[in-house]
Image (cartoon, rainbow, N blue to C red):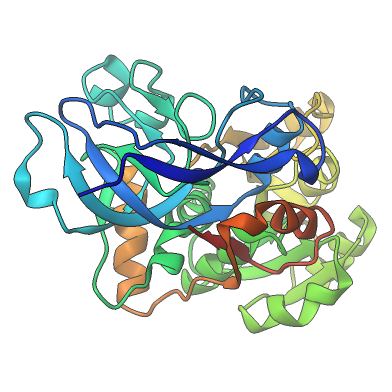
Length: 346
């Protein structure tokens, strides 16, 4: 049985890492059809940093954290009893399951459900969260909860983007922001698919780690000329087949100009929210395709769980900290001191 109150880390205000403070709250009550999950681990994502700074929908008093894994310990009315005791990884948004977006399988666009952890819903910087069979995927016993926590966002987002860009065996793909949590796993997944990966990172200290994950070329703080030179060395002087743009504004022009004619760019992230400098002339003349790619849905997460369970992809959760060190984890992420993901352990 869950206790009446739980420990959380909440936003005292919007600002630097120091605004993340310890607090206590009542344990949430699962609504009809929902699950109560005891959080075993929660990832620290760049999205959390933007939310903490006040650049997203989170406000003072919010509990951040949308990369969650744990154990189902309670049920709302009408929820199938078979969920109790299951270890689960969660998708970051709970959809409604009934609207036109859910009916078409586009659950990442659903706006009728309970919402997104850390913004619409109290998130995983806590001991308990509510969930739903619509956003929960069971974890095999040999996949630990710290690994499970990062499968949806850090791994599933990259899988979704690679599918959006139609990356296949033999393709050459440029991945920006490759040293971050989504980036390292996008590199590993693209390599698993048989693609040739050119990884771009702003951190020279992450070059060796990215090579170990399968990147054929790793460029630190590179401009478009250096990227094009690397592509030419790989036998692609006209450019890459695809790009996965994880950083956004700082690297968008480089990624776009690195594409060959009829190249495809999947836009995943925008770490410095701003209007992106899309070059209409270049896009038209080269017949480029720019495709937005959102976070993983339940199908993406289920596919990633299968890949990890089979040993095809090894998630990179490099740092594990207690929940009380959430502020330090945010500071490390801002300093680009972590390759992969940090997870907090409530």
